[in-house]
Image 1 (cartoon, rainbow over the protein chains, first blue to last red):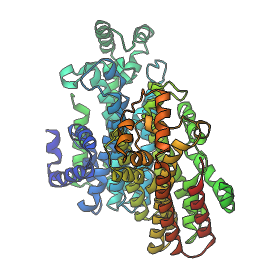
Image 2 (tube, rainbow over the protein chains, first blue to last red):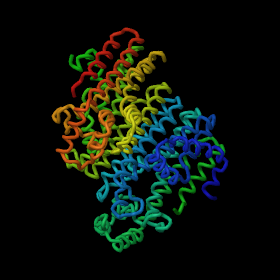
Image 3 (cartoon, chains in turn brown, cyan):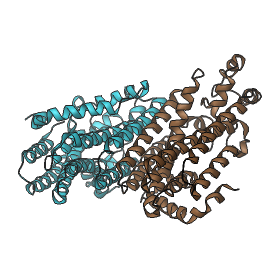
Image 4 (tube, rainbow over the protein chains, first blue to last red):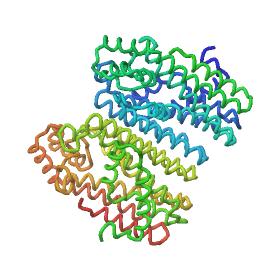
Amino acid sequence: MKFKMMYSFLNTDLQLIEKELEAAIEADSTVLREASLHLLQSGGKRIRPVFVLLGAKFGDYDIHVVKHVAATLELIHTASLVHDDVVDDADLRRGSATIKSKWDNRVAMYTGDFIFARALEMMAVIESPLAHQILADTMVELCLGEIEQIKDKYNFNQNWRIYFRRIKRKTALLIASSCQLGAISAGVDEKIHQKLFKFGYYVGMSYQITDDILDFTASEEELGKPAGSDLIQGNITLPVLIAMEDPKLKRLIETVREDTSKDEMTHIINAIKSSGAIEQAARISDMYLEKAFSELKGLPAIKARKTLSDIAKNIGKRKF
Amino acid sequence: MKFKMMYSFLNTDLQLIEKELEAAIEADSTVLREASLHLLQSGGKRIRPVFVLLGAKFGDYDIHVVKHVAATLELIHTASLVHDDVVDDADLRRGSATIKSKWDNRVAMYTGDFIFARALEMMAVIESPLAHQILADTMVELCLGEIEQIKDKYNFNQNWRIYFRRIKRKTALLIASSCQLGAISAGVDEKIHQKLFKFGYYVGMSYQITDDILDFTASEEELGKPAGSDLIQGNITLPVLIAMEDPKLKRLIETVREDTSKDEMTHIINAIKSSGAIEQAARISDMYLEKAFSELKGLPAIKARKTLSDIAKNIGKRKF
C-alpha cells in the first residue's frame, strides 16, 4: 500500500493544515518568502501532522483545535531543517548547488527563528500547560541533539549509547511528542497518551536507524546525495558503529575525513556493507518496531490504531 | 541615583531569578557551558526581569510565579544576543577578538536555539493563553526585525518609518512585553496591563534611540567598540537618517562601506555630529519618554510606578 493511501481518510484535514502552514510562514518580506520556498519543497509526507491527527483520534477529535498542534509540530520540524542547512558545511565545501552564501546563512538562521516563533504562535491557542511543557522539553532535547551531533563529528570512539541518545533527541522525541500532543489536545487520558508517546518514540528510533542504513544501501539517485554521505560528513551512525566492532574495519573507517577520495569511500562503504553491519542494524530497527507494535496493543481498537500500525510497518520496509 | 539603587527593594527576588537563569542554561555539555559564559557576561542590568517584576507589582505579586516570566524574557533576550553574534560579520571581517570560527558559529546558533527552548520550558508553567500569545507574537516580531536589519544594511534610501518599525521590533516590543507579561502573570486588569505595555514600548523606543545616539557620542572606551560602528556596519540609525536630510551630507554618508578608512569615518562622524542630527534625535527620544510618563499617570500610584518613572528618567539621561 502506498504511504499516503494509508491515511487518505485524513486528506481533508491535512489540506486544512497545509493552509495553516502557508498562512504561518506568510510575511511581507521577499527574503522570508524566498527562504520559505525551502519549507514547501522539503515538505513531503507531513508525517508529524499525520501522527498528531491520529493521536487525537483517540479522544474528542476537533480538527479546529488539533490543526494548531499539527501545524506547530511541522513548523518546528521545518525550522530545524532550515537551521540544519545553516550548519551543513559539507555541501559548502564540496561546492554543491545547495551552497548558502554567508548572507544566506544569516538569513537562514533568522528564517528558522521566525518559523520557530510562528510555531509558538500557533501553539499559544492550546490551553494545556502539560502540552506546552512537553513541546518545550522536546525542543530542548532537539537542540541538545544537534549540538551533540556537531561535537561528535569524526569521533570514532563514541559508544552506542551516545548514538541512541542522539537519534532519540534528534528524531524520535519529535515523533513521540506528535502522537502524544495530538492526544492531549483531544483530552485523551494520561495512560493512553503516554502509550502513544512510547509508540511514537519507538517508531522514531526505527525510522532514524532505517535512514542511517539507507545512507549506505540506497542509490545516489534515491538519496539525492552520494551513498555514505553521513560517514564522509563525520556522522557516525549505527551501521558504522557495528562495523567498527571489528578492529581491522575500525582502523579502515577511522581514516575517513571530509577529503577522503571517492574511490576510497567506495572501498570503505563496500567493506561496511559486506561486514554484516547493515543486517544487524536492520535487526535493531525491527526490534524497535516490535516495541512500537506492542504499545499499540494496549490502545483502543479504533481505525487510527490500524493506521498507526500500517505506517509503522511501512517505515520498517521502506527502501528510500 | 545609580541604576541598581532604584530597584534595590527587588534585590532578593532578582537573586532568585539569577538562580533560575543559571539553572536554565545548565547542561552536561562542555560546549554549551562554554557558550553560556557569553550569557552570564552579557548579563548586566537584567532590565527585562526588572520590568517584569515591576509590572507584577500592580497585581497579586507572587515571586514564585512571576520569576518564571522574568527568567523567560531574559533568556529570550540572551538567545537573541547569541544569534546576533552569529550574524555579526563585521567583527569577523575586521579581525577583532570576538571572532567566531565557523564551528563556533554553528554552536552559537544551536546554543541560541537551546536558550530559546529553555525559555519556553520556563514559560510553560504559566497558564494564561494570552501570555503565550503575546510572547510568541513578540518573538515573531523580533525575528522580522532581525531579518529587516540584515536586508536594510547599507540601504541609505530607507525612510524613517522603516527605522522606527525596526527598533520597535528589535527592542521596544520585548521591553513592552516584559512589563505587560509581568502584569498578566499577576492577574492585573486588561486596562492596566495595556498601559504597562505602552509604557514599556515608549521606554524601549527611547532606549534604542539613545543607544543609536551613543554610538556616535560615547567614547570607544565606554562603548567597547569604535564610535560609528553601527554606520560602518551598514546599520542606518536615526542620527544618520536625520543628517541625510541635508543632500550634501547624504552624498558623503552614502560613501560608507565596511572598508571605509578610519580617518574618513572620523570625518563623517564629525560631520554628522556638527549637523545638529544628534540633538534632533535626542529630542525624539525625549518625546517618547514623555509619552511613557503620560502612560504612568493612568496607573495606580504604588511604589512600582515611581520606580518605573525613575528608570525611564535614567534611560533618558544615560551617557553610555
